[in-house]
Length: 282
Image 1 (cartoon, one colour):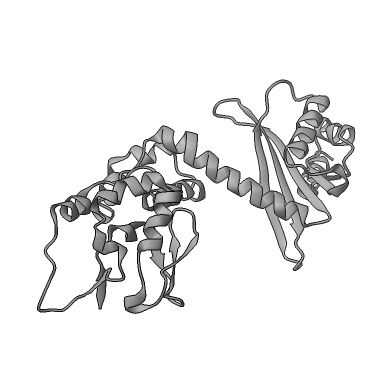
Image 2 (cartoon, rainbow, N blue to C red):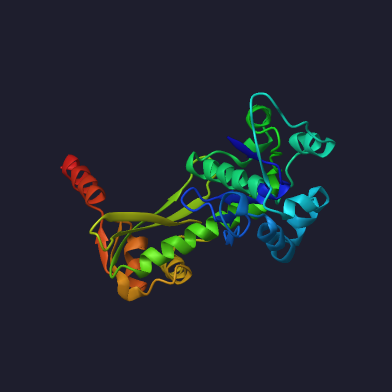
């Protein structure tokens, strides 16, 4: 058993398969330690921070002693002897991570993903229950404010998802679309949905909701057609890739799809409902 005494290890992670190299937690770069065991050194790690991550280096440079530049950065631990913590070590154990600390950023994104996956409101980050839980299990983590998530973390997360989906759309030849236009009964606000369906190269059926757009203005065929074309343009999806767009039987949506020059198909369930209604009138 051994423990690291150099504060530089805050920003590096060991490689279980190759102890001669470590990985920087800030930029994922692999850094050589110069050897194994007693021949291993933290000099390369310190120099990497000093040259590439000056802000992180400034946080720990006061605690770096000349001994930490040698191979003697690992001290044996035994049940009979323990190292007394310095004042700096005590302060570090209770000090909150900086908002840009890589360890904190990891949890920023995990919380944002939880909000998206579970469809939680943004104000969950302001609730005392979540703060109490995080303070208990991650005492050094300070959860950021709601604007920090809504203006920085979630937009960055959305950007990564968009890039990933665009790559998937580029790798397929044909895409089918389902769309719908409806008005919310609670607030009379209209929305237009746009969901893509396709088979990937391994013949797996895949889908992605590309858009749930707040639809302003009148529900005319031309306005709907413009909105559909705008969505395709935003996702850099050429019209030639659209195999078919499935929709309800509304006259405006039928005409809109025609004006947008997309192959059209009416939803079977909507058509069946109309047939049943007409049958009951007889």
